[in-house]
Image (tube, rainbow, N blue to C red; front, side, top):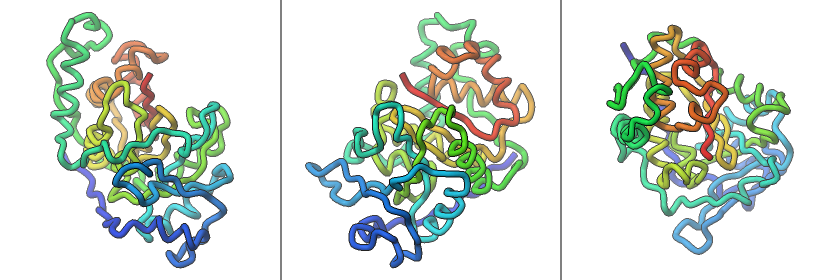
Amino acid sequence: MRGFTVTVMATLPNPLPRLATDPSGRSLGLQLPPGRLVDMADDGPWHEPLLWYAEKPAAPGTWKALGAPAARAGLLPVLVDTGGGVGGPHEWVLLPGETSYPGDHDAEDVLAEYWEEETEDGEIAGEIEPFGDEWPGLAPASAALAADPDTRAAQVADALAGDPESDVEEPHLALVAARRSADIPAAIGWTGPVNYEGDVARICAVLRSWEDRFGIRVVALGLDVLVVSVAAPPVTLEEAEAVAAEHFALCPDNVLQGERDTLRAYAKDLIGASAWTFWWD
């Protein structure tokens, strides 16, 4: 059993401020389309931009064309949803000053706490079979990669950009200064799961663990939606059920309010899946 090595990229200094005077990003070796910088914390200690995103919607091929060069400059790509009547990230509530560091949290401890909180009254015993109210533990790492993680991320990004009925209605490419893809939500102080978890760094701790075990990348963020690509998905029902338990702990609405309203049924859709989507009510 093994995990997958994730390259850690230093992000200091933050390259984003250079885009204020160099919008094309040429000084960073980039050729960026017109875009805008977002800083939602003018009254706090965070005065540097949190992210840049393109004015025009992403199209298939955008991620590969801009994401890889940006990563070499210390900026990681993510699609941001500007649809749904909410607008883009400049309309979101971003709270980086209230976010801790993902590395300070243990993924299993976080998931075990969530699981216990959701199952303690015993009212959803049928929905979470074959598991009970005791946390079942982390799912084993997948035995092998089905695809290169960054290649899979580009494929999933292209699919989202080319599908008008996806969970990300109007995706635009964004760039974030983050050490690793799993840290992107914490780096911008994303508040999508705020009704479930007030410190998104705890969510990111789980995403880091999934990077190591399943080769995930954070591909898209909406107001309350998270999409990750998966390079090493489960291949058997038993493996998928173990992963589904983690999904339930992280985001119970995926199961309890989804089309598959039991963990067993939900797990079947995880077998071989190239992307996982989460939403918090």
